[in-house]
Length: 310
Image (cartoon, one colour):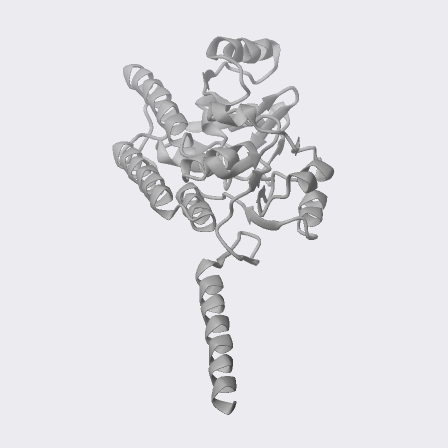
């Protein structure tokens, strides 16, 4: 009788240990950009991305088949268009999110409303906040998603491609002459970005710099007078206008005192403002256009000196 009890006890303990080991091996934990340790019991199978670039990152990291919803404005890759929408940057549909029963929500720290982020974290699912502040965060976020979804191999390959391309661009334009650029993210009213913004990072890859380095906000409105006083070489338009439309938009200021005319370059905002792998394509387009500006300046004999540290 005693021996039988011992055997039964051993079986129970062994079974419990086996179950614990299986669960522990499946458990995934990572530190998000809000400084929180996020743990899920197994790699995510039902993911909602509440920003367009997060949907792009999810597909690039090999977890596209696990994405069950995203937000309005998400359109790449085309498969995203078939997914349900749960709102946008102005607000999220929490009832719809609850009905979809996600096990992981990917959120954008500065792109989603603080109140929405707080409500998401109240128990709907594990919420992983990402906040891209540097171009290296693109590859870092790919690896994070790969870890959370169990698609590390695909994510690692995607991250490595981004890093290689970024390094190639940095090397190509390392000795480029100085170009001062005002970034225009909206035109009526004028909106720009600060020197620490991701777009300013993109300018530095091309050997250029933000002509408004003391602008105090990450992004926001800027008086026309401040833009004119900056005496920039180029206006970079990421408003969605074509090159011709952007140039025509700035031509309206010809009658404004202090306006001497400025060259405008336009890049598709979907390529240059969404911090995913396609942003490297946008940066390459930007660098090519700025190099054309340099070439014209060289012909006119007014090229600047190389940027310090480049």
